[in-house]
Image (cartoon, rainbow, N blue to C red; front, side, top):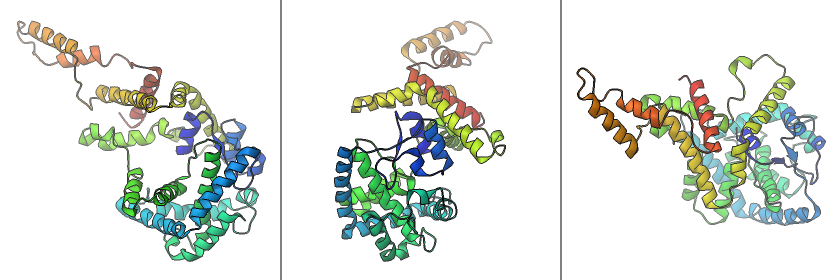
Length: 379
């Protein structure tokens, strides 16, 4: 979901190679097919470091390693595991359980990813871990913290989890040295944030509060809905194309082989990226806090229009609309049998609020997507 969102809305997306500084698309191997298809479509680009960038990356990696190899580095890994379990215990069901997802992810990686033509083409060691200082730390940490790691990793997969987390620090060092933003894999995200906050002196309680907030759900639309619409609005938010969902319809599944299906998905991403050109340009223009605030207002405005038109939020009429309502109501008083209120507010809403999507191109685009997702949710 996060990857699709970036492919649609970011100006350009790069992918780092775990070993090579100047990789080509072929250096990543033949799998995953999605990565190769995205690269072939020009939606994804191998990150290639120049000589000056390589020097800066080396310095950034050494700084990260100093912290990782310190006593605090092992403490952060243990803290990350404890936080994952604490958050999982607070979430009903297993769908959003990070520890369960990591466990399943490890099993899948062992069976389908660390094979010829895939991960082994990128990292050719027996255990799938790099022969560099990050890999050395991962192998040591998987022994020292084997017990805690087994709460989220199958037996003998502890080292792979530790290496995956450490690799996030390596990738972020490359992003920092090249002036880019690193979008961490969900498995790495909480670890990197815990690592940063802890090394800056934040207490464990503060770090856990931040992680809990990030693992939460968005409530902007939900809190505005009536109780009987809450679940429907939650579904709406989950299915929005803006959040990376609904690139295909249920009726389309099960009819293609793997490569054809990936081709369909990549084509849909490219098509949606083209439709979202105005919004992508607005995101790219965001430099100052005021720019981000303006974009946030655009998004809020589109949501507000949708809520008003679906009757989930009472419409506050303007002074002009209020005068119009009062004027019409006063006329109807002299007509026997005509209700004074019924229909008046509806008429005013139709005049002032329900004719068409208004606002900036970004707002109009967002409104259409919100509305389509609402219709898909069954309204």
